[in-house]
Amino acid sequence: MTLKHLPTFDSATAIRAVMESFRKLDPRVQLRNPVMFTVWVGGALSIVLWLHAMLTSAGEEPAWFILTVSTWLWLTVLFANFAEALAEGRGKAQADALRRTRTETLAKLLLEPRRGSPYETIGASYLKPNAVFLAEAGDIIPADGVVIEGVASVDESAITGESAPVIRESGGDRNSVTGGTKVLSDWLLVRVTTRPGESFMDRMIAMVEGAKRQRTPNEIALSILLAGLTIIFLLATATLLPFSVFSAAVSESRGATPVTVTTLVALLVCLIPTTIGALVSAIGIAGMQRLSGANVIAMSGRAVEAAGDVDIVLLDKTGTITLGNRQATAFLPAEGVTPDEL
Image (cartoon, rainbow, N blue to C red):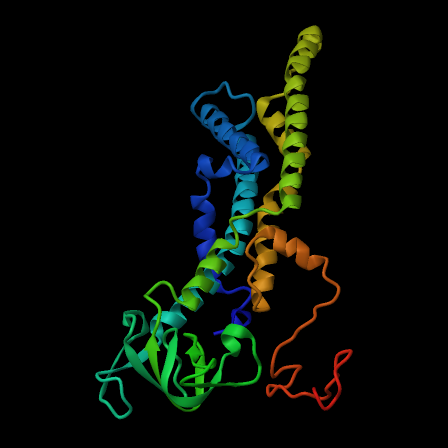
């Protein structure tokens, strides 16, 4: 199961993202993003003002106007939550796909560790260390282990990216197999060497799930900048209310009225860079998922930034751009050594 075969957008992921966007309305979650937390506070304040206008006749603005402003504020917060949840959802979908590959794989557990012994079919997750299973042509190897008997051609492209099949046999340095790979021909008897939850596939799942938890240095710097701008605009907007009250008092005879809190909240949200603040975390997560789509697991956001500066990638994959059977093309004697001595 390769990560790049997962769809970029599907209805199941979108539905989960919508549900998660409402769960993220928790103020403890919103506090992680100062920009969107400011919008969240503005939305909560507008709801209070709307209820006051609905229950009394002394509202600062018509109830429909306050409700309209409140609706846009909450839609802004939900959009930010949805963007982040959608990016996180793809990472979870990749981990779920890998987990299904592990849990849905069946193993032919041998009753005796020899060829021809009867076997029972069990789930791969029930295999314990030192258990011996049979893997035949077309089977998915259910767990990490060592080959104790047999020789077979194995496709490891789903795990290692190796395009050419490799030979696995008992004895020597080619006797290890990895869960999730596929036997293409012949058969193998394999002894399990890892406990449940500690296989290569489990570590890959943990890396995919944990890849979203670290922010990049650029993301941190941008978050600090946005928080600083939000504070500046908040102070600027807050000072408008006393000036407006003073101006209205001076011009009372002309029927002037001070600016309302609802209008100031709407102005603040228009001033602060809400769109950038809403997408900062989603952009970082999406970058890691794009690498995962190329079968590259980024352990942190810093790795994504480093990948953006790479101009040349030099690969040395045996069987892909080199010969699998290593051969000497020339013998070069060192200084003071004759060719015959070499």
